[in-house]
Image (tube, rainbow, N blue to C red; front, side):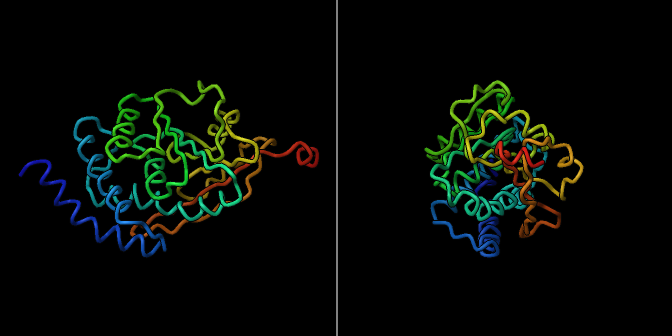
Length: 233
């Protein structure tokens, strides 16, 4: 059986699992967006055979551990961004495009930039953006510390990028006024959060219920403190 046939067979098996997860998350997607998520998984499987973008190989595990894991952030992300006039999001250390690609597909109101220091990973994200015609998705190859601060981003997200304090320190100049950091973690990262400096404020650790995943997940939401607030700390 050819690789294409294998991918098509895997996609037909994954579609009902994705539908069930979307129902659990109360997340409505158009047929086009649903198809784009499955196509993304197929592309990830194809590239992974050559470039080792992720250690997860089984398509079902990719769906639950990667795609559905990121889909669980969509409603919290929309809630947090509801009062913001802009929707610019930076995904730091994006790897195989997680969560950036999933957000760009499922929440097209966001303009997503994914940055990764590994060239093959940035190239993969660019290929996905082209193949799926995601005009709201860009890829940058480089280190986030080297970005010059323009443009700034309303949401800075990370899923597998070092510690929370390192994320904040390395991207502080990139966060727009009133913006927030969205650090995706497993269990509540108490020790990491204790290392945050007094110029930022952890305002919420939000537990996530990820369908089909028997593991803890949460988002640590962080913002900069205003000058008036710093004087009170």
